[in-house]
Image (tube, rainbow, N blue to C red; front, side, top):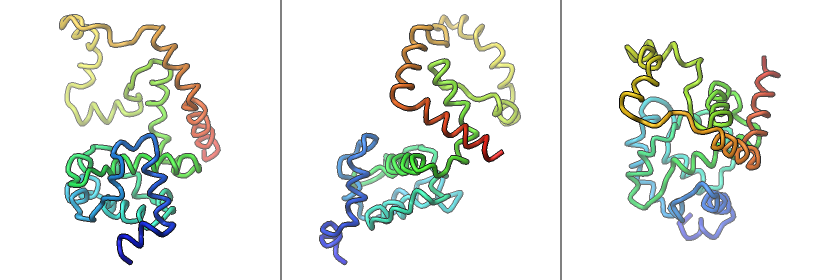
Length: 199
């Protein structure tokens, strides 16, 4: 099958859906993919798992709508290395984000999100991304002195004459309203409810 034939066949509809998603900033980069493998050769997730960015784009172009079911999709943590090296202006990172949102909309992969619900709660209740407490022991073990630094963060910020870390109540209220109106809150509640069912 030639590239021109592929563009004229219905499988391209899946790629067009990805391109038209609001999270995609690279215009038609997906359609320009030449399968050079630069994304995979520089991807940390590909180096340490079976995740393969080049394969993701190949499957999108082939119209393979089963990709959101893939376990390996969740190994991408959005470092944007693929985004920065693509010679034709594609971003597998953004494509991956779109595919994950498709999965979440179909209630696929909720089990991958449970540990991160604390981040979502922080955005909703404090308007900032804070590290969930469940990660504190691991961070303290991996980063010597981290816990002491965290305990003294407010004093350190004061000494450096930095503004308060926490946003004002007005900002928190505004962000919470935005997250509610856009469906973020209800999505988090559905994920949390499914976690309770699994327990």
